[in-house]
Image 1 (cartoon, rainbow, N blue to C red):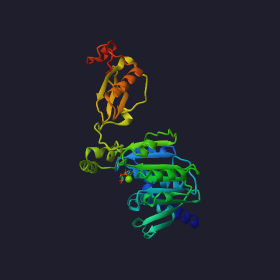
Image 2 (image 1 turned 90 degrees about the vertical axis):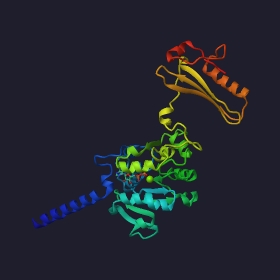
Image 3 (image 1 turned 135 degrees about the vertical axis):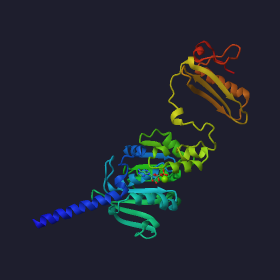
Image 4 (image 1 turned 180 degrees about the horizontal axis):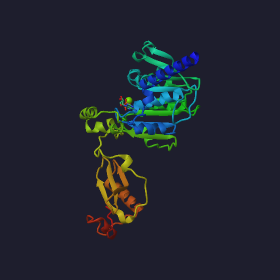
Length: 367
Ligand SMILES: Nc1ncnc2c1ncn2[C@@H]1O[C@H](COP(=O)(O)OP(=O)(O)O)[C@@H](O)[C@H]1O
Ligand SMILES: [Mg+2]
């Protein structure tokens, strides 16, 4: 009887101390309370094998990358098939950034009871936060040991060769050769790539390969995060951050949007997700105007516009070329007009439309 009571007491003590430990480790409270970062959850829930978060600074990117990494290594991912003996890389732009950002977040979310061993590059494993970690060996819940190794892009592509991996997490945009090398590293094991970044470098290969998904890879997934998506940021911090940035900086640093290369944006509200749509058959009745912004050495830009009955304006064709003469541009514009069935008026002129309905009666002008 006394033995039984003792067993019950020691069991309940264990449960209480386990509950205390869980309360103090952010992994167990991550997105569990009333406040939830919905975009982080969308990222975790996506089943795709190449997932990217494009976000402003402080929008919550690195937190979700770190938690994803620990879930995979520990074998406790709530939305994926878990494995044992997982091997993954955390890739930062430099060792300094690794130490201050990705490594710090991993240590924040890693319950110390999961750690089997820490191998340091520099510094002491008794205080890993002050040094540069090479690898953390983690007890996987299926009984095996998983490894999270930290890599820096400064090391160059060669240092990324050879290994077979279950996942790679890029915290911020890596150079393209390192990205491509890592894609090869996960092929064997049908592993995952995920990245969390602020697109500060403009429309790079990530814009083409991930955001536009030019190769139509069915495994590509991306989402944007901005300050207002992060319910954990306080308003004073946001106001202070915003006050230190130009409007142009805000495009990438607040909204995580890709800036156009080598140009500042004239229409800052332009958002490809809103303003670029799939082509559709447009009624000739909506054909409206042609604009020409002349240029001889510089590009000449001609746009063909259609306007529907609700006043929505569509750019339906474009001629854009530099270093050509007037005859050449006129020929090109006429060719587009012909292909669209855009009718010229006999006098070569047209009046401004009074309203959209009148468009049905009008003919179109081609210069
Ligand atoms: N799920 C979360 N739970 C608690 N705090 C969070 C969460 N996501 C983000 N935060 C808070 O927001 C801050 C910014 O997040 P972080 O991931 O570091 O931003 P980013 O990498 O986008 O610059 C963090 O320091 C943290 O305080
Ligand atoms: Mg970050």
